Length: 111
Image (cartoon, rainbow, N blue to C red; front, side, top):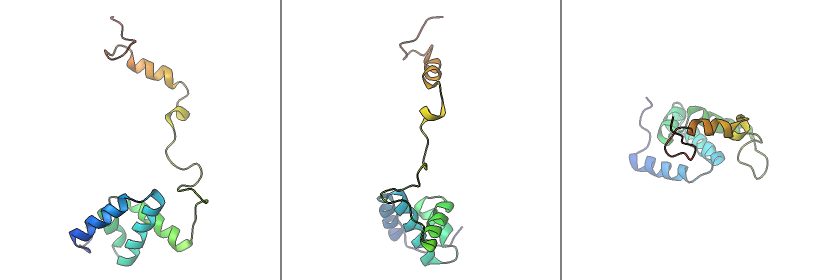
């Protein structure tokens, strides 16, 4: 466990500010705070802000290497969660199979 660096009041303010940022700016804010603290700062900031350690590391990499995402974007093209409709070809059939026999379903049949 990282040693305490900031007061509880400052941590509360940091969390509120962090929550107001978009994904890219969250990474960068976490990275800046971790860099300011030095050794152990990455773990401490990830614990305080509730983000993954690798998120802080990615932010540090972006800042130190000057990595930029395309203009007007937060993520790289193709990044982010994929839609279930893109991953499962027969999503309608799978969904109706799950609903079959459930009372809330219009497909409910007595067996």
